Length: 411
Image 1 (tube, rainbow, N blue to C red):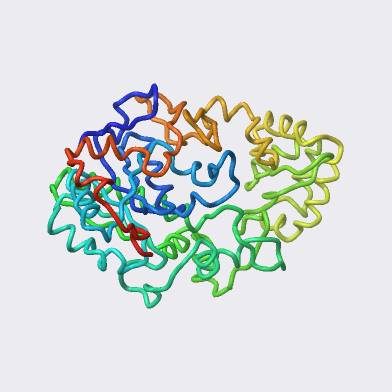
Image 2 (tube, helix red, strand yellow; image 1 turned 135 degrees about the horizontal axis):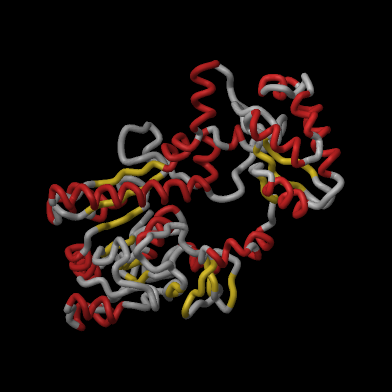
């Protein structure tokens, strides 16, 4: 099956051009992965259940009957509705898989095996196929393997929530679905590695991603600190354990900003930029350990000066002095920052429903034009005719022959 679906106006020499992905994933972790693959040239065929499609189509907010949630992670994809318990649809599905390079799925372990499409079965039939699986706890090795999982579940189980929030406060969920998003990113990395390996060996492999594993991988310093000291880390707010202050959030005349002056040189530059050069010579703040011991006093000294100007003013002054800093933006303010336009991080969605603009890709390549437009997320079953035409499927194998649809793959 030839790659046919690409963002309008973009080059066809993107890194994954020529790769076809059969995407059985739903909601967020898997669709986030396949969105990245599609943005960079892969043809992604999203296989959805006939009745309702991806559950995310029902998630709000909606505009004109379209889900902004669904559209935010399903651009540049094609949709075909298939009931994998229907003999006719299974024939179509198997033809699509036979032409594909990658299959992705995020069902609970065992579901694909019950459908007859587990990794061992498909690997025997299609030995070069790469099979990407993402689940809460992985395909093997975990006593939790068969449990259902959501982002919130793995954030809680991993300890991520225990180190998030204000000191002394209740465990707090990270403000985005980091459990899903991290799993989607690791799945993307795994698939591209498997493609590289296949180029050498000719063999496909299964990429097994557990959402809980990905959260553990992101805890980095917290786990290292515990293993070395025996301490159980707790929430630290905007403070960065291990680095001397000032390194965190500070109040200005009209809001808050971040200052990250985590070594003696940067601290001296900060003091100079604030008009308080002598502060770096104060015995309470002369070195990193002293600043840790007197952090409350240091914060008071800094915020007393910052109260004399706006966040914008101090970002300009400190930035000019070489001090790492930035405003604490709201989403609307971030989107208005000229960085967003300059880096093509808000792009047009051609044919959009709820969204006419979406976040661009952070992956930039020196010899590939930047992604500036995308094709909006598809309607359910929108590309059936084109996909079946590519496969040479006869009319009697198409939707006219199907009766008694179920709900597609059971989760």
